Image (cartoon, rainbow, N blue to C red; front, side, top):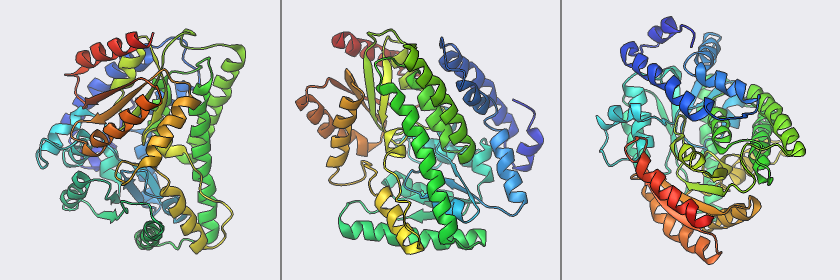
Length: 423
């Protein structure tokens, strides 16, 4: 990584601790990613993004602020980025995916809080991530109790705006989410000082839809019998999509898709033809959480689809682009976002339907149903997930893990036994 110490100092970061994080990441990335054979050349862009992860994009965000722009830090795929970009702001994902930040979160949160929440809070309070320092305002949501209390703690250190997500999907709940988006639009206008026009919102709806289409194309390449790209690489590109410039990400991802679709046409894959095909469902995997994918793909299998927020939930379903009034566009946003099948909803039978559908579309041999430790929503919903998969005759195994490496060998043993059963 180039020298960004002056920028990090200006952000008030703890450089001594940040140096420790920067020392670890290259070795981990080399072991997990650069050790793969026959990677698509298009992954060079994503290698660059990770190599400069605390440099290039943060510098772009700061340049945006110097021109009077605002940066919104988000933690969830329910936040409508379209509104932020339409007001001239930039949305950037802030979910923490590293064990490095967990102890910082545990200074203010109970130890039995999920690692994603602890890492997100720790990244801010320990001052070791530029994205968490740059954002002018954080946008939280009410998808779980742990997050709701974490927003209150973070609000003592940084402005936080919370969107109240309904927990059911009745008509009145969709209408309630529509009202929440209207309130959010007003907050975004207040923060940026810019009015959101139908023309601007229509343009950004098309932009974010284009990002979803690029991701759907990338993920969909793994429906082929010949797998032209690893699950690890698709996961990485998806993680990068949360904070990269949308236009650049769309261009780079479609270029990567051109390459891997060419590989499929030539019958060139990155795994042997008889490699077991695995779906992973459950809690999201924020960067740099690559643990499960790495274990699966170094145990003789391939991850071909992810039913999670860093997977199909993020890119499936488009916002209706035909609406020309703000009211119509906001209604279209509400309808699209309420199609996300997060475990916070009750009942959540559509998620079960999605899992079965994806298992068939991607021709999976088995499913790893996972949850982050102390993520009670996905842990509890695993009962219905496993029941439905078994009834459909699809092998499934439930796993619970966190960001540490302490359980890595135990997980590998269980996954290898599961794969042996599939063969």
